[in-house]
Length: 266
Image 1 (cartoon, rainbow, N blue to C red):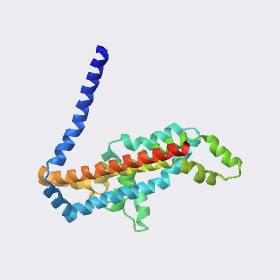
Image 2: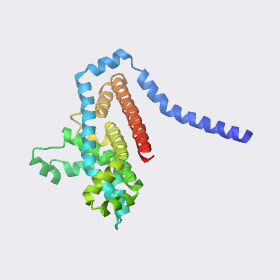
Image 3: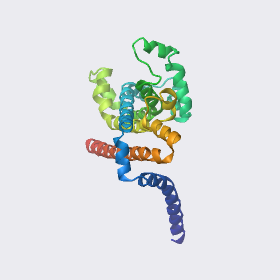
Image 4: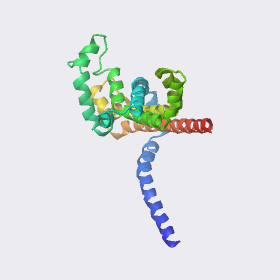
């Protein structure tokens, strides 16, 4: 009993240290700016337009990724082929590599002098220093969150359900849209929310590809580099609060989807 109590005591102390490590900077950041200062900062045209641009770009990146990543997730979950592990590794590489390196990599493909940049320029679409550049930078670094969650969801679905659907005359497309996709909806929503939230915070890839128009993390860096802590802290606090709201919504949606799934399976 004494040994167990000592073990629990050690676990509690170590947990509190880690919680303090994460909570203390965030608490100090948020409380370091007065309410009036936060309100005045939000009212600045550059600030609120940048924050809205950041949320919009991350949302667009997520919607495009849903269209592209869900089919790939289904393919990776259901088909075994040589090099599958390699493909899965490549698709997760953006999470591992430095994001400034990711921005440079994107620049060598989507830059105005490179092949995809030249191709899209024929349709009037440019990425360097444009909103589209923010979107693809966010999409590149945050897409694995959606892909991995969707793959996990498809793998959790019993393949026999799809085989029964096929045996009853349904086509592969009908089986996918009526069986696999609805059963994996909670994972897709969860992965999409994680991707959207991760895209909001992206700095390294965005600053390389599209310094202007600014995203919120770039604006925070620019204010800090130009004016110091006093003028950058309120914007950082606003983004932390916005991210907290996103996190609460994410947890709420996950809980609702899990509850709905449990009731359905029950």
